[in-house]
Image 1 (cartoon, helix red, strand yellow):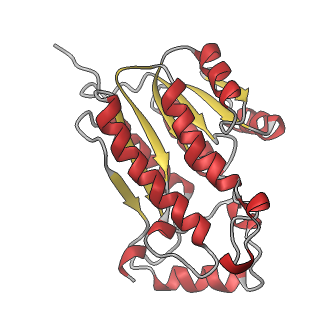
Image 2 (cartoon, one colour):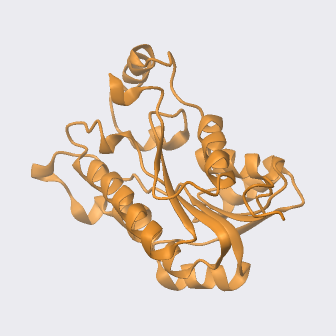
Length: 244
């Protein structure tokens, strides 16, 4: 008898944030593994670019904002039942700043996209038996920086949410990937004057000797999707960042 998870077939997948960076790399890896993939994001232009770049007949794209419940519900009305949902969504605009002057009106995007959005995915996704949800937290939950309270809080809360959902939604598996510093366009949203120097310094500090790449996160996602006995777990893909 063949059971889902042991035959390495991934089935149908939805990747939130699949139009760029880590999400696009995950979509690419899923397509290479034979999955039928739907990428989702807020930017139709970015999704169209990703579709052209990935160029696979098993790839679809849908524009949606997962912080809006009506859009999430409509998304899964459209795609129907799927085997796996992976979310890398994170609106970082305005998310960094000292708490004494933090502008919550401008900086709550990460809360809405990463935490509330993940809860809405869990509520509305129609996941087949043996399937899974993967969320993406980050190193800020373990190595917070001054001015990064909102990011640290949301990442830590997301990991708690995943543990609770693993209990509530089982046998659907719910896991989290926690990346370290990864070379993606997300850094464009962080207004550090010495950004390049900080990135180089971190690469030199890490035991792995470099920053992460989107492909590193994609391989971690495939590992979680293919293992039917991992749930409620945080998989750290940080090059040893928690150790230094």
